[in-house]
Each structure stands twice: as structure tokens, then as C-alpha cells.
Length: 140
Image (cartoon, one colour):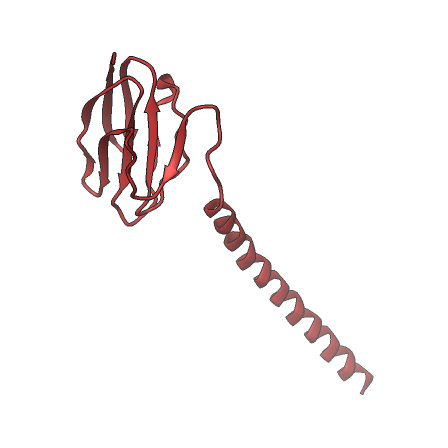
């Protein structure tokens, strides 16, 4: 009888261990996803994550679509903003605007937009996936 009780206790401990591991395996990714959804871009540059609302400073709009950037190249005046609108069903990644003094978010969520004010004159290249885009900033 004692052996049966010991076996039942050990089996119960194994089940509890398996359940605890399953909870941790599920909770960690959910917690990370929740934390990422609450992150904000903060730096000294005038960069803002926004939803689909334009401001008076937005000079140009670039659509991020399944087929790429629309348009790939545009010109704006110094001090004006450019807004990228993610029209895909997944988070989008932009890279390469460091030389313009723009810090990009790690991802732009599906249905969200990202705006940046360009305060330096010049030609600035960036990437969306494998496609390249260019922002030409001219003096006001």
C-alpha cells in the first residue's frame, strides 16, 4: 500500500512539473508580445508613432504595401514630415535613415504609421524589406 501512495505522489509531482513548464513556455512569449506593444520611441529627434491621422506638418505619405513602397522616391522641404503607412497585414521594418538623424522604430504595426521630421538637407536612402526608397530633402 505504501508503494502505491508513493507512486501516486510521484506521478502528481510530475504532472505539476509539466503544467508549470507549460505555463512558463506560454507566459513568456505572451508577456514579451504585450511589453512590445506598450513600447514607445523616445529620443531627442521629433519622431512619433501615430495611427492614421495626418498633421499639418506631414508633407508626404509613403504607403508600405505587400508589393513594396509607394512611392519609392519623393522630395520634401526641410522641416517637413514624412509619414509611412503600413498597409500590410504584418508588422513592417524600415532601415537605414540614421544619416538623416531619424531613429526608426523596430517595427511599424499593421495598420499603423510612423512619422519623422526631416531637418537636414540631403538625399537619404532607406530600405523596406528588399526594396529601396529615397527621400530628397531640399532647403525651405
